Image (cartoon, rainbow, N blue to C red; front, top):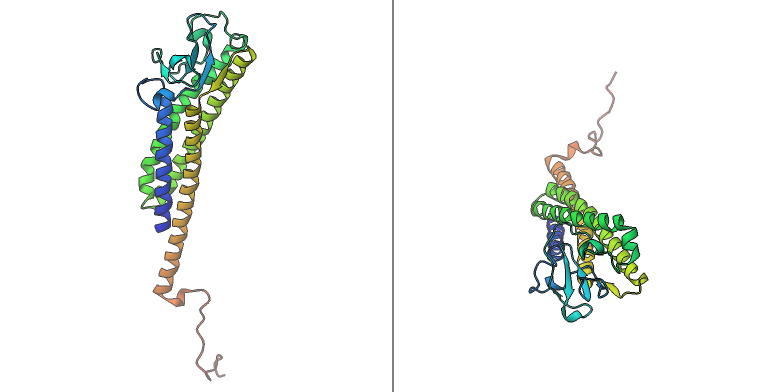
Length: 253
């Protein structure tokens, strides 16, 4: 069971690390005075020509923030009110269509639904990651715990993969839209890094849980084989009783 315990312990550490990174992304935009929360945003863009928008806008899961001192990659300040499933849609975020790049207006459903589904999958991913951590405690001492943890980690991996794909798709698409309009824009390194880092953690944790389950299963089979040998070799299929020397194997007629 030592191998299973080691795999389970490493998986727990990786899952916990992934949870921390996902929580950083989830809380980005909620506190302007906490590092690194004030650095977590998905996209920055030059919105100086949009009425009512700051010079440099930064989009989070909850709102739009202003970049400190109008600098690219500055800290998030003057963040708007927190809204669940906040859509990435400049005309809705700023309440105007004036000078908003045309692709946002023509394909508003794409940005609207991709960003809202990404928010939902962030929450679902965190739920399954926490479930994987709870079952991971059982994996430290049992083969069944390793199996349950592998299933939970697999679901978490699926959800985090979907989250990262949706998030990357919508904000990379948005960056391209700003570029096509001749405006500077870029993705947020922290939000992207934390999300894809969590994906890497869950991938490794899932593999380790599966290895732990396999190690525990092999260990159990070896124990059963040893127990069978101790109970008596006569039960082994290759054992055959030999007749004493000189004793006839056939009865005398």
